[in-house]
Image 1 (cartoon, helix red, strand yellow):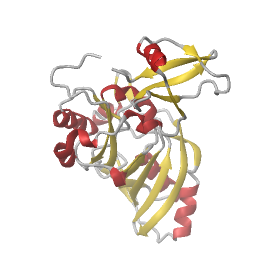
Image 2 (cartoon, helix red, strand yellow):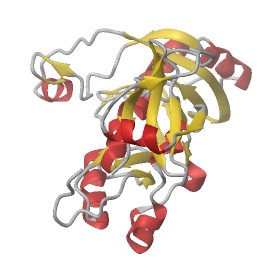
Image 3 (cartoon, helix red, strand yellow):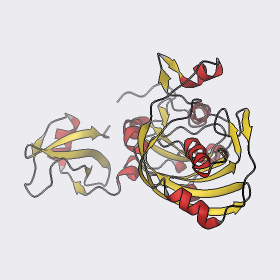
Image 4 (cartoon, helix red, strand yellow):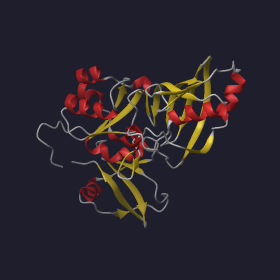
Length: 296
């Protein structure tokens, strides 16, 4: 692969901590400047209000973004009951304000439990979803009515963490495509008082968690030392070592015979004898076929 002039040739991931304020796109631009590399992408947009884990893919690892975006995510969220807003969070205009009963923690957890499993969720009107060639938030800002189709998402678990009327804090583990703003809004409707999201911290995206996340200042100081290898995302996949002849097959995109005891369509990590991550393989039609290659 030919590298662009000034590109450090970094392939891998940065487990970046996003502060509240900048957009996810802002952070991509800053990482490009800090690391001097052009091929940077992020997995899983966070609203400007939100903070927490925002994994960045660099170089050839950008080809793994779809896999990372599909990983389960975990959040800590604060919802203010009794407040409905145009954006379903603290950045929107207030629509209604309702007195909030002194719900018991048991009542609140019971309401949260109704969202566990596969549910149909309506995205917020103020979102980046494309509508008629534009963005939903542009239509909403213009005053046009926005009715977005519901989408199926999965809530793996949801737990009440604290309750100080009118704000409750909860932790949720969920699938790709889940809007926590919508979850807060729908929880408020379930309780009959409305609600909006006040604060959001993303704790985890797949294998990347908040405890190991770094901010831009630390990244600027340590640079490539903080870049995690591309196979960080694939640690749950089985692995094998390829010999020199098989490395040559990989470099040329050729398939070769695979043992019959390997499950078909299973992603396998391939390493050279020197321990370099070389490729993702799958056994198809009794042959190893390279899906993605990471060799120079």
